[in-house]
Amino acid sequence: MKEKIRDYLESHFLGKSSGVKDKDSLFSKGKIDSLGHLKLIAFLEKEFRITLSMEDLSWKNFDSIEQIERLVQEKLGQMK
Image (cartoon, rainbow, N blue to C red; front, side):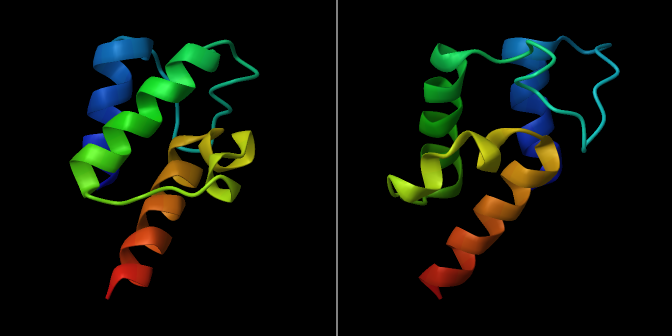
């Protein structure tokens, strides 16, 4: 899961040699902006077949690869 998220971010926002670590802030480092946030949401919903609620869309849930993975795992767990 983390690799799919990282691959998407690297190919659309970061670049392959970005050096961004799983805990690095994507927003404060300027790696993703508000439009990128929307694109990432659409990717996650389609790729992992989840539905994100308004509460899920908080920037804090998307600030790092680690936090994004945690959100997706939580949503997948709720579907079982």
